[in-house]
Length: 249
Ligand SMILES: NC(=O)c1ccc[n+]([C@@H]2O[C@H](COP(=O)([O-])OP(=O)(O)OC[C@H]3O[C@@H](n4cnc5c(N)ncnc54)[C@H](OP(=O)(O)O)[C@@H]3O)[C@@H](O)[C@H]2O)c1
Image (cartoon, rainbow, N blue to C red):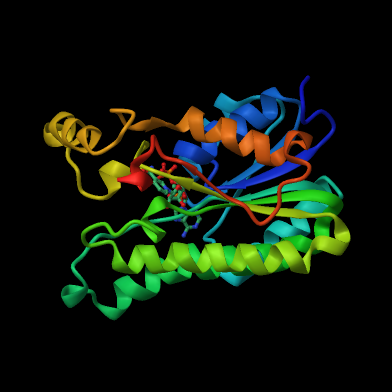
């Protein structure tokens, strides 16, 4: 029981990292949660970890048919949604001079197109007064080496959010962005940081973060819970950094 009692929530990328932490916290706070992701094994493990009758749907957010499938399943299983957390994302870091079109398109297809059409297709299922939360990154504002394409995808998400905050206002649906700084999730390994160098990578990164450490997925989840719940009932079109202060440096 908790602040999301009786609510339904869908978390994309809910089988790992920030999405998994948010799905757990939403469920602990009373929501019926559905998670999505591509890896079935991780979805199964996440459903077991979340408990509270959580459900999982497999698919690729870059594929528009996936969102149609998710919308059908949500309608059949839950009827409607209160919270849509469009969180799934990927990153490849490359100097712009070396970025190929496939790498460019993959990041835009997952991070920008996936969020855009996910919201377009799920919005009709959202109850009036619902909450849409998008995961961006401080990389959209702060220039980070080799992050140009990723930063562009996240800047697009932030622009979508500002438009949607006004487009959904008649329905009382709030649209907000979470901008994480460096957070300790599996995405760091996916960026090519090996176990061997991980400790020194973290230590070096921590020096650049005013609070002196990487964030934890649970800390992002708490900010997502704020945006999902009535605690943020007068907040829309906002972009909340949860970044240990790194955007200030
Ligand atoms: N961790 C950080 O330092 C950090 C900083 C700023 C922003 N972010 C953003 O935070 C969000 C969550 O990342 P995370 O750190 O929690 O990383 P993560 O642990 O790697 O989680 C990424 C999630 O997205 C899913 N995903 C990726 N591509 C997908 C696709 N094409 N279709 C469906 N699902 C897909 C993954 O599941 P599958 O692989 O099973 O599909 C996974 O559940 C991302 O949008 C990321 O850009 C993270």
